[in-house]
Structure formats: structure tokens, C-alpha cells
Image 1 (tube, one colour):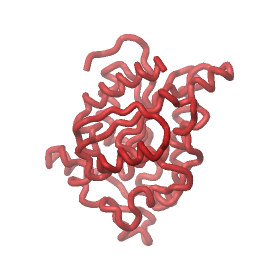
Image 2: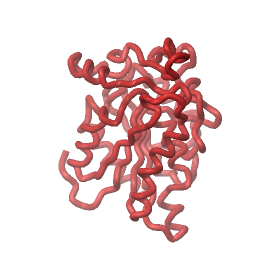
Image 3: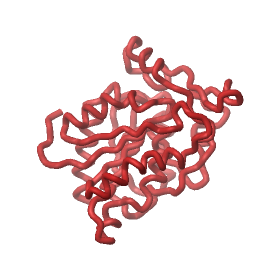
Image 4: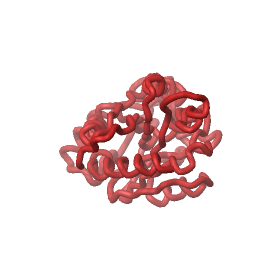
Amino acid sequence: MAVISTPQPHVLIIPGAWHPASTMASFADALEAAGFPATVVATRSVGTRDVTIQDDEAQAKALLQPLLDDGKDVIVLGHSYGGFVITGLIAGMDKRGREAQGLRGGILGVIYLSAFIPIEGETTFVAAGGNDCTFASADNIEETGLLGSKEEKYHFYNDIPDEVAERLVASLKGHSGAAVMSTPSSIGWKDKAYDGRRAYIRTLQDNALTIKYQDELIARSGVEWLVKSVDASHSAFFSRTDEVVGLVAELAVEFAKN
């Protein structure tokens, strides 16, 4: 990936369930190398019980707001469960709306990377299939308040070498049960201000959010998306890092034009 010399938007990254910020550090580094300043949000729901989606929104906003106050343009990217977090986070923070208020900076665009696109009143528990979810375990939730993951290699890392996948699995933490049972503060992706500036990156080998389900999420939203695809697992940010960075760069150009 060639370095882009002109000033680029800051990319704010929200990881998926169970994944600490460290799992997306190499992706953030690759974005930086391509000219995009990048920050990964350490969502509180990873490893901490009784944390809700709106708590994660607040954690992300604490990093987003100073960027906007400094007049920065920001691309918000959410992976998997991170789609729930960014859905509330982006509401009312778009660049167009802020410009109309005489404010500098704002969210230039939003990217859902193999992520849930929640609708009103929907929880992650419901969106992930409820009790039939194949990649989550509630075996210890009453005792710990945390949801476990299971069959991670198959669901999350099916295109990653075993030894690397094992290291990733070892880094995962329980996810707050309260987070998967709560809802976003708002459905920000519906805002017309994001027309031409909302994108979805499909992952074609995904065994967690299947490509069929990803397409259903896009279709049921009822709004238009800029859609890109990568031939990768659920964790394309790790297995196809350069390709995903390239797609972010493409989308940054498209967001700026629209």
C-alpha cells in the first residue's frame, strides 16, 4: 500500500465482541503507514461485566469528540459487534451537519466491516441468533456476567494460520452480557447526512456473519450503501490487512466526493 501524502481523515476503529484493542493494532499500524491516522477504541465491554452498548458508545465518543473539536475529519469503522457501537456513536456527528452549524470537522463517513447493522430496539443477542448463536457461549454468564466465545478458529479466523489464530484466541476476553442485551442510543446510519457516506465491507469467507446474512442486513436497512468485498474470513482486518486498508482509502475518496 503506497503512502498517501495529502492529509487524510482520522480512522476511529471499534473492535468486535471479545476482541481487545490489541487485536486490531496491526490494522491501525497499516492505516498509519498508508497515511491515515488511526485509533482503536478499547471498548469497556471486553472483559468487564455490566457494561452496556451505550457505555461503549461513551468510551468511543471520548476519543472522537477531541478529534472533532480539533477540526479533524474522521472515518468511523466498526467491526462485527462494533457495528452496534458505531450506530449510536455517529448520530448527529456528521461533517455536513457540523458545517451547517459553523463547526469544523466531523464524521466524513462510516464503514461497517463485516458488522451488524442494528435496527430500532434490536440487541446483539437477537441479531446474532439468540440462543442459536453458534459462536457465543453463555455457560458462565450467571457467575461472571460475561459471554464467552467458542469455535473461534472456524468462526473468526478460518483463513489465518493455526499458530497465529491460536495467539489471537488466547488474547480474547469475555464480553459483557449487558452489552449484548442492550441497544444503541440511536440509529445513526439512517441519517440522510450519511447518504453517499455509509459503506459496508463484505467478507466472503465469513463463518460468523455469513455473506448471506451480511447481504440481508444491507438489504433490510432500506438505505443505500457503498458496498465493497474482500475474499476473507470474519477477521479480514488481520488476514487481508492491505486489501482492507486499500478499501478504506477508496472509500475515503468516495466519501469526500459525495
